[in-house]
Length: 259
Image 1: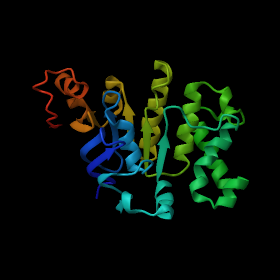
Image 2 (image 1 turned 45 degrees about the horizontal axis):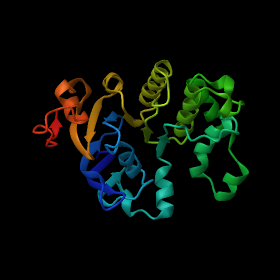
Image 3 (image 1 turned 90 degrees about the horizontal axis):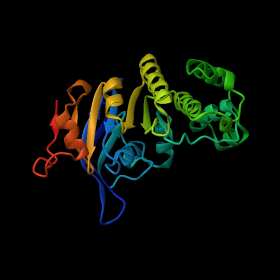
Image 4 (image 1 turned 135 degrees about the vertical axis):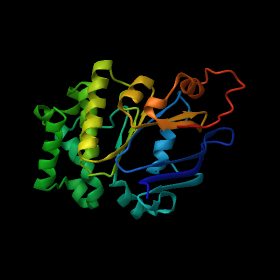
């Protein structure tokens, strides 16, 4: 059984605009999948439907055998412990230390009181330091996050997601705010650590070449629909033309390319 099944997914934010249209795909455990497409194609909304950060209007998302759209608040909170999330703008608490931000990734396992009091076990603290070491920022553990560079802050975000011990990590434009050198560092860490820990990864990207270099598979979105779904090495110029709308109008009938 696939880890993620997206079936005829549709999402609208208003009556005039349909952000996602009849989107269907499966993701297997251990896959590294990139979703590419122009701004406004629906990439961020798609990720947020998988963990139900936005509500699903049409169709279904099934994660690890559970129908995401049917879960109540308590069930959804439990499910999200298995889904790490990495954001474009990091979503850290700037005034708190690196280690405190990483440990926030364990909140889903805590009672409300434990979360307020910041009660973490020694094992959780050891795991946080282990992840910071893996990500090359152990020396910054007690610095405030607002003292770090963008690339370092994103590594804190990765550690915070990984300390959840998730089955999947969703990455929403994780390198969009970074320079090329920092971007390569982040993608190298994402690829190597998710492979080592056998964690599935879905990452939204603007950069086609980076998607080709790091992904097992690429899904191309255009105007809310999938127009390419296949191995990264089979992403051709014709495919990218279709995704980014640089083909002639006759070709742009959103025919799905599967390879």
